[in-house]
Length: 353
Ligand SMILES: *[C@@H]1O[C@H](CO)[C@@H](O)[C@H](O)[C@H]1NC(C)=O
Ligand SMILES: *[C@@H]1O[C@H](CO)[C@@H](O)[C@H](O)[C@H]1NC(C)=O
Ligand SMILES: *[C@@H]1O[C@H](CO)[C@@H](O)[C@H](O)[C@H]1NC(C)=O
Ligand SMILES: *[C@@H]1O[C@H](CO)[C@@H](O)[C@H](O)[C@H]1NC(C)=O
Image: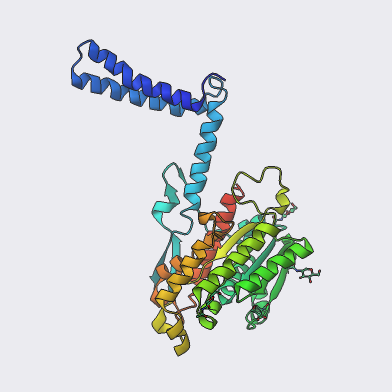
């Protein structure tokens, strides 16, 4: 290979710089020099962008360029997948992705609300585990709403809403196994991770989240932070997780889990339904708990393995009218969260419908 991308770039820079300078030596006016360098710059830019379409001229550079382009699109899309707007209308709430995030620069991100057939197709043969507190339970209800018919949903509804209990369901027609595991505390999440390791079985999709119970019953953010770090350490030690997009080469793809962190909702203090909650679960405490989550480096954006489902932002955007008790929100928030996860899953697994 004669030209790497860097050499090519340097050469282009030299041409843009020196050719007009040379011309200036021939007594061209400043405006003409500017015109020439502008024209040169544009034609070089056009050439560079055309190179990928004529791979035979440049055997190696095109692949570099197209991969980078691919990654930028993927990254910019995945970073806007939480950007959802809610609308209230006469019969309740609706939602959609922000216009700006649906088309972010280079390519349209093409986020979509998946229908039942698409979801069955995406989750066909998968094992999905959702674990956490009542927020996780509401997330599961929204996911099942997408997958099951309304009569099937009715049948399991009571069981699903039993307080503080697990729920296991298998959608036989596509071999989807969905487990909801009641885990109010981060220590419960860590225990579960250790159990996966002991059993040597790992779900394809793992959705975890915890914090509200700890805030109410311990009200100690540094303790929450250390429990998050224990969870992170147990994940790093125990699980065959790929931390970045490009190091799963050589790994058994069946063992690469997709991991999502179900963030805490925005709390609306004056609506909280007990005095104890109002006293302990203040805005300051919520902020301190958030900081611990970021500091723990559990999230992908901080170098960890969980993609954040930003329930805090989503619930905040839906607003006060959308909340029942300052902590649990209208179904529409969890519905949007499920679609955010499914779209992130599509992007992560490089699938298109
Ligand atoms: C699920 O996958 C199996 C095997 O790959 C396939 O035969 C079946 O048609 C799929 N079902 C759906 C609903 O996509
Ligand atoms: C979760 O952890 C708490 C505190 O460590 C423990 O008391 C409780 O039994 C656990 N709950 C479940 C469902 O494992
Ligand atoms: C581990 O295996 C046991 C026995 O098969 C099972 O009951 C349990 O649910 C498994 N745990 C997890 C987290 O998969
Ligand atoms: C909060 O947790 C930290 C770390 O676990 C502990 O050292 C500290 O004593 C706790 N603070 C209170 C007020 O309980």
